[in-house]
Length: 251
Image (cartoon, rainbow, N blue to C red; front, side, top):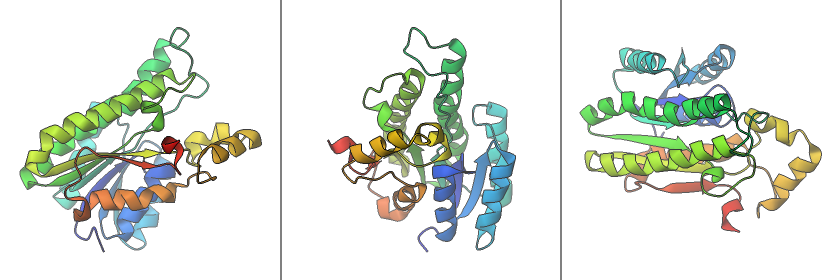
């Protein structure tokens, strides 16, 4: 098993991409901390992993500094170390997104609080442990919207562009300490976050057809690259952007 004796924190691990990554980490031998705001989903994910491995659910709003600090403390109390942090928790306020001049302050602030501040806060409280250990891997789940312009996604696109900037700054700071920081960029993945858009058969067909692979992605498509980045196999991968998008960004 590629992650045996490792401890991983996965945020937003109750459903979708986060859950697929958390379950795969568990299958690869890691003890997994499920940092999830939704109690039902978080407990369900932890129970699924615990059937064949070790998991701990900690209810966590990643935009809340006290909750992030408490979650990190509980992980250390239980396992004594943290080897992997996968920052995945995010919100997409579909019905509130708009061009910049129409976007509400509330939609902007909430999106930034979870999608960018949350990544920074989790990193802020996990990195000191990795520095003491002299090793670690941080994985940020970003988005193509952080690289290319997408209409009516002002807050979400900006937050994900910020995630890529955060990843690069962290990669430069922490590589000398043997802490790898990288980003995964999913394409259009069939997850609860995208359920509104993908509920329309025409939109679903459109998103499948614009990717050269001619299909939507699944959360499981992200799990393999996450394991690679979490394991020693990626020891020389620093500051990388790894696309898992069926070729969407290649055309």
